[in-house]
Amino acid sequence: MDKIERFEDLIAWQKARELTRLIYLHTGDGSFAKDFGLRDQIRRASVSVMSNIAEGFERGSRPEFHHFLVIAKGSCAEVRSQLYIAKDVSYLSEIDFKNLMNLSTEISRIIGGLRASIQKQRDAKK
Image (cartoon, rainbow, N blue to C red):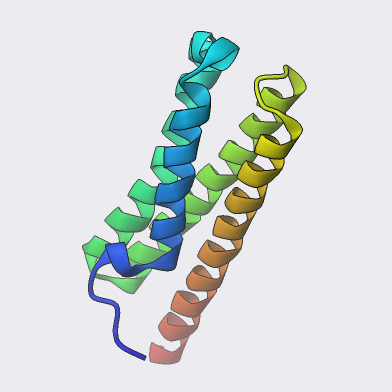
């Protein structure tokens, strides 16, 4: 397996980018677009996922990357929590909710695996 040299090559970042794109699409129309608080918060949370993966990777150290992955995973949970709100107030259809929820859950699992791998590497160096 080749060494990943750019954050853009990380599957976690690629999927987080897709989640952010979808969040922006779904929050740009109808009642969701008019709920400025929830719209802006879920957008910020989704942007935080991909941004923290990128920033942590670019910092170049395992401890910092691990730290930023922890933050990214937390932001992913924030997105999921806000998706429940959007569904509960009928901003999202059931199918859109499920698709976004599945993607954000998948991203969270990928980040968790990446985080565990980095922790294992850190522990092996001790």
